[in-house]
Amino acid sequence: MMRRAFLGLLAGMAGWPFTPQAQQKMPLLGFLAFAADSVAREGLWQGLYQHGYIEGRNIAIEYRFADEAGGDFAELAEQLVRHQVDIILAAGHPAALAAQRATSAIPIVTVVADPIGSGFAASLAHPGGNVTGFSLAVEEQFSGKWLELLNEAAPQVSRVAYLWNPTNHSSASSWKVMQGLAPRIGLILQSVELRRPEDLSGAFAAIIRDRAEGIIVDSDAIMVPIHADIAEFASANRLPTISVFRRFVDAGGLMSYGPNLRELWRQATTYIDKILKGAKPADLPIEQPVKFELMVNLKTAKALDLTIPYQVLARADEVIE
Image (cartoon, rainbow, N blue to C red):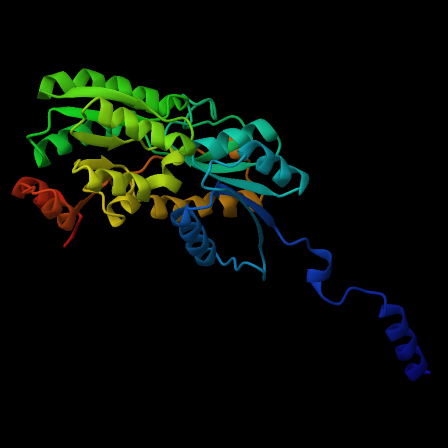
């Protein structure tokens, strides 16, 4: 009797899901970036792993990369929305803007220069919408430093081109800050606008035409896929150059000054973890970096016949020799 009852129980259990995973939907992230942005990807993977997430095991990622000709972020963002991702990770201003326009419901985690001025959030403490993450605080914290450091490292330079994206609110703020600072330290600042990566050749022509003697590279993400081209152009024309991007120095640029973007993306996975556990992006304060790094490429300095002053090297977090 007991044996028949036990067999009947087993038969009734045959339709039950034995594993909890069978009823659980694996979280799906959408990653939107320029194809060349390996820094954001590496920071993302490292942070997810530290939070216990392993791609393909307990979390899935849909990647959408704009190509080096600029791509169509709007279409890529809409693809992620149609794919019903749980969170969109938008690397940089163009990606974040496209994601915000594509959805007001799906949470968006981003690292951008000025989320308030760009309209992504109401305030740092209370974003209020579906976007949260990190603010680079470019215009207040380090755009003026680019001018000062370039002036210290290459005092013979008098005309500096600012290569920037005028459609980015933060870049426009940086332009205003540097316009006020440049005359005080004896520099002439020239505006060279770049709205799309494929317009780079025209920007190079403007730099040559206006006889710039140095270049400041804007923090906008459109510079990511073309940073090596800019470094190569600067080297060929013997132009001292500074950027926010560490990758620019690795590619042969003279200096970079700004936050560690890989580290910010690693930290941004904390937002991913909280959102997946039920938090709303409207209630997650947008953070700002607390550390800025100075990188100097002495090999490039030597090629430019520059002797970097000791006071600059002493402040450098890393020197490439």
